[in-house]
Image (tube, rainbow, N blue to C red; front, side, top):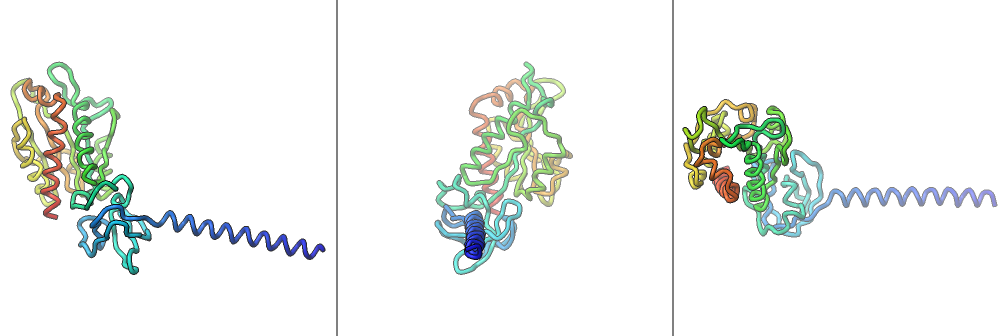
Length: 282
């Protein structure tokens, strides 16, 4: 009898162990599989838009995730094929998209200038630049996310973020574009007006600056074009990066537009158009 009890005890332990292993394997397999929710998702040679497209999946394709890098997934898909796919294109939040575009594959970092204890420039009536940069960034983020882009804000509320941390975020993510939003200020109020798009690294960022500036010409504040600017947030960026001064906050006419409810959405449309033009060339 004692031998029989020992046998059943060992058998029970073995069964429990096997059950745990099966359960672990099931959970592991579940956590590493996904379904592509939209049509024509590109498969690339590497983890980023700069890599060549090797294939495209159809809606409903089952993928097995092998590894992850910079928000990209190395996957096995139909007939044991392998390649890289943008991770956010298999998320449920993009299920309403019908197809991918260059912009829907992009990782874009938006930087609302200033924040927290850093108010930025002031209007003639003491209104703070940081308030309006955040309004614009949120409107642009909403527009780009609706198009399927992976958008990260350096801040999404009134908090202080150090200057060096802003480009560091884009560099860590290996972002496809970085845009810092600001509002200009002149030494004397009502003496300057206009929008300027700045770049620092000509080889990586001038084309992006031109495409965004060209579309900024549709905005109600006149565009002053593209200029070289030695600003840390674009100087310390290894990805295509620009800084947009979207009007003069201490100019009466500019500020009337800046503070309007429609201006953030107008900027969002212009930025979306500029990025669409830019990514179409990549």
